[in-house]
Length: 455
Image (cartoon, rainbow, N blue to C red):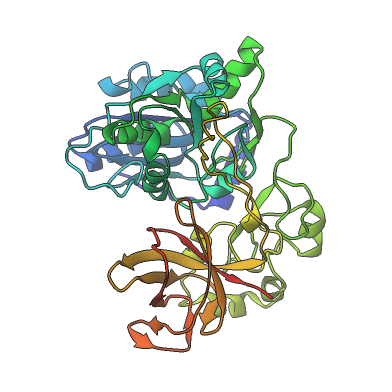
């Protein structure tokens, strides 16, 4: 019984081309109680492998999250295979805005603790007690309501290439990180504002809407089917698209065009660009935005160092990679000091309540442009001694450096490091992987970002 892939991505790509069949890229999700996720996973793999399904699917005791492609000829057989399960009968399948036969090149069905990692440990939380679903027309109308706060529930590298107008775009790396940040930032508006959320296909907003209702928000709404379904409805009904730019997708394409607006810039030269790529150096693989000119000049790499590496013999490249964990660098998608024009200075937006003399609404607070490099994030605050603890994820800091601590509630705070402990010992310098602590005249919050200000 085959329960894993036997072909490489290259072999699969050749088979797809040789078959000459049009493939459909689609996604769907469903929250449900699954008693045996492993058995469920095996059943899906066997059924879908026979239908030439390729993609990335996560299953857990709380449901399924699927992004995949399949031959168009097998679409109805695929629908039959999922409707064997009661909780997936009549499920909405989000067909991609743009199609690519090579969007996925292997079938991966993984068992996870949760289909959307949220970091929550709360047995009283009911993920099925969700907010109100809105279709595209209703979503557009609520966007114009001055009492609406619209929040992008995606990560920073997704929202930077496309987003809804007036949206708050939290500068976060993960969904789990966004929940407490948004809750704390909007705590004063649980009753008087309408909380309107969106994401790619709806799965993150589904859980987020239940979470915020659980936390006492009274008026919670979400975009049904996410950006993908919104775009389909906008085209079908001749509506104005309030979403501008590209929709980031988690397959080979890395994005699909929604409008002609380009709302981001090349991370290397600063020219308008919204094309994501991965550094071709396999030992780096950093996700970043690169224009055609920089792609040619830098040979698809994020830095001169990586250009040098790719010209080494393959065995030397493997030797360099051997034993080095690149997961953290890959995880920090688009955040690296080698990216000169990375939008570290870009406003991701915070909600600012209007003064009583003005009409109620939202505003995007512009952040001053400060030349800085990303260092790490806050992990704890010791209130009595007023000491902040940080995990150093990139670069280094030392005594005498001027640092910037930034967060949705903390704001932007500059401090000069006079003394610090590194891994519980007094040290002059902290580097990637270290945990450091130093005294602060203010409180930090979980996941506040730490930067070093450059001269």
